Structures are given as structure tokens and as C-alpha cells.
Length: 266
Image (spheres, rainbow, N blue to C red):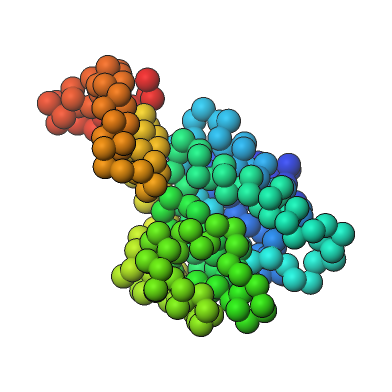
């Protein structure tokens, strides 16, 4: 196991690499990990750093302190000089676009609250693991706003219109067990085991064939908004490309030899 801690570049996130897994920790516990301009900038740069690294296969995003993220920092005076439209389009959207389009899986590891646009961040990730005391919260009708950060799309796609609409207009906490039951989260684990379980999960995913993981993410993202026929048409050339890869040969060889495969991503 090789640990790298590279935090000199960031003020509001911690960036740690554990072999092929990068852990990005939102680090504004004094503000419940709420977003200000510095955090938006740091998180985007940390994600770009992980994207450019050749040896990274999984990213975990988590929060320091008592919460994943309380959303936007409503006490922040820096954003007053900007329009909200500008902030959403120019500072938040690049983060969500990068997570959606990056080749590798991104896991949200959620404890405490993931609220407001912090919830949008968690939902944007490919996978989510929650501590058993964690909850999601979309409090927008309590402050006369609409869900943002793409939250409407995520919730409607994952829950259907009626359930998504109810959760948002009631502004009630959504506990971890409910999230797992209805597909918002993948796993619920004891609070004290969250960090270790998230890392174990990420390491196991990192052992899978990276070309296959990347192609599967792309195809499933595509399938969410396209027909069966269009998705089939995307699967065929992807499968042909993979069957011609060295990783496919290694996977078959390892299966025959009854050993763990050693994938190189080629």
C-alpha cells in the first residue's frame, strides 16, 4: 500500500492517494463543509488532478467533521458580488460535469448531512455509501428556492416524479436506510466503519478491468436518456474494442488459471 498526501495545493480539501484510490476530503468543518468560492475551486482542481493521474482508478469524496456538506455557505459574503446564475454555471457546473464525464467511478461517502447543493454533489457521484446516522436533505422550499445542481434530474430519474416531488416540497430528512431502499444510495454501514468500508469498496472496484469499468459507466450514462436500440448500438462497438484488448486476454487467462487478474488498462 502506497499512501500519498498532497495537500499543499489546496486550502479547503485534503487530497490523499492510497495506491489506485484517491480520497478527496471536503475540509471546512467549521462551516459544516458548506461551499464557498474557495471550496468550489479546490474541489474542481482536486478532481482534475485525479483525472490526469495515470494510476488512479477510483475517487472517494467525503467530508471532514460532522457532515458531508451542508450545501452553499449562506453566510458567505464573497458570492454577493456575483449573480447566482453565474456561480451555478461557472463554478458548480464544471464540478458536476467532471464527475459525470470522468472515466473512473466516483464514490460519495456520506456521514451526517448532505444538504442542498451538497446533496447534489452526492447524487452526482456514481456510487454512494452512507453511515447509518446520515441523512439527505433538500431544504429549498423552506428558503423559497428550487433544487439546483442538477438535483431535479437526479431525483426524478432515481425515484420517479411523484416521490421526488414529495421529498423536495416537504423538505424532510431522508435517512440512510430509506436511501438504500429506494436506490439513492448503494450501502448503509455503521458510522464508525464508514471510512474503512468506503475504502475497501473502492479498492475492490479498482481491481476490476479499468477499460470495462470506463465503458460501462459511459454506456449506462447514455442509456439513461436513450432507447434500448440506441443503447444496443453503443454496446456493440464497445464490446468489440474490449475483446481486442490485452486486459480481456489477461482476464480470460486468469480465469482459466484460477488466479486474480492483473489489469493494465490496455
